[in-house]
Amino acid sequence: MSIWEYANPKKFIATSTPLVPWVMGLAVAGLVVGLVWGFFFTPDDYRQGSTVKIIYLHVPAALMAINAWFMMLVASLIWLVRRHHVSALAARAAAPIGVVMTLIALLTGAIWGQPMWGTWWAWDPRLTSFLILFLFYLGYIALWEAIDDPDTAADLTSVLCIVGSVFAVLSRYAVRFWNQGLHQGTSVPVATGGRTVDDVFFVPLVICMVAFGLLFVGLVLIRTTTEIRARRMRALEARMRR
Image (cartoon, rainbow, N blue to C red; front, side, top):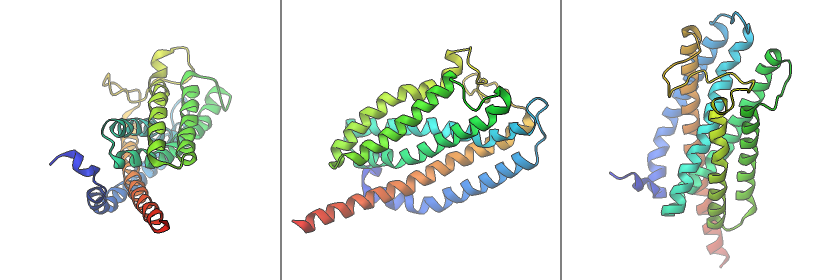
C-alpha cells in the first residue's frame, strides 16, 4: 500500500472518518488526566511556586504551534511537487489550529513570565520569533481567503509557508542560537536526551504533550475532510451555474 493512495479524497475521507472518534477520545482523555494531574497533584516549584504549573499548557501548545507549521510545510511541498489537492487542503486545515496553539503559547508565556521577569513581554529572541510566526499564520490564512482560484492560492500559500519556516526553526532553537535571551532553555531537549524537569512534573507534562499532539491530528483530520467537502460543493455550484 502506497501513502500516495490517500491523496485520493474519497480514500482519505473513508480512512480518516473512523479514526477521528478514537483520536479525539484519546486526546480528551489525555488532556483530562494530564491537566488534572499537573495542576492539582504536583507540588509547587521551590523557586517559581504554583506558577510553574502553566507548563502543562504552555509547553505542549508551543510544541504544537511549531510542529503544525512544519506539517504545513511538508504538505505544501507535496502540493508543489506532486500537485495533490488533499495535501494543500490539509495545510490549509492546519493553519487555524496552529494559530490558536501559537496564541495559547504566547498568552500562557506572558502569564508565566510576568512574575518571573517582572514584565508581561520582553523582546527575547524566542518570544519575538514566536510573535513573527503568529503573524505568518495570520498572513497564511488571509492569503488563502484573498485568492479565489484555489490552485493559485495553494501555490502562493505554499511559498509563504516555506518562508515562514525560517521563523518556525528560530522559535524552536532560539535559546540555543542566542544565549543572552531571558527565556529558559528547552525543558525536554530531545536531541541531547537530557531534560531540566523533575520526574514529578515530567510525567504529566508528557501526557499533556501527547494529548495535544493527538488533538492536533484529530482536528486536522476533521478540518481536512470539511475542506474537501466544501471544495466539492463549490465545484458542483460552479457546474450548476453553467
